[in-house]
Image (cartoon, rainbow, N blue to C red; front, side, top):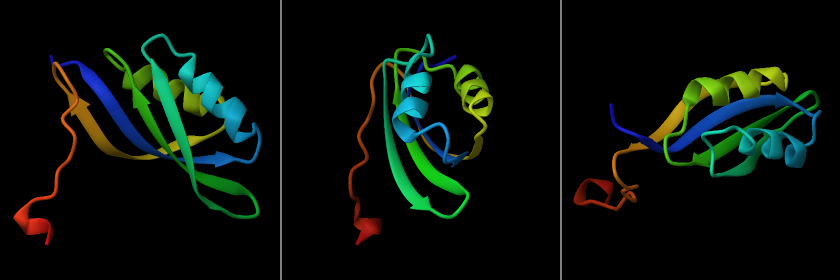
Length: 96
């Protein structure tokens, strides 16, 4: 099976824990080398957050369990990069 190098997920989380603490807890997972969390939307009760996670063999199951332990839920998997290296997305003629 190919190694997952990058995972971008859409997460719905409560306001607590704060985004910094939430991101630190996700980054502490054994398969995660780094995480970037971006606040997409905030309402009265929840925050919609995009997590970009990288590592040498990101374990989606452990990431999802950590998200749920923090009271949040994964809404969707929006991007996955697998293989020996991450291939950056490039514009094509269809994108014009």
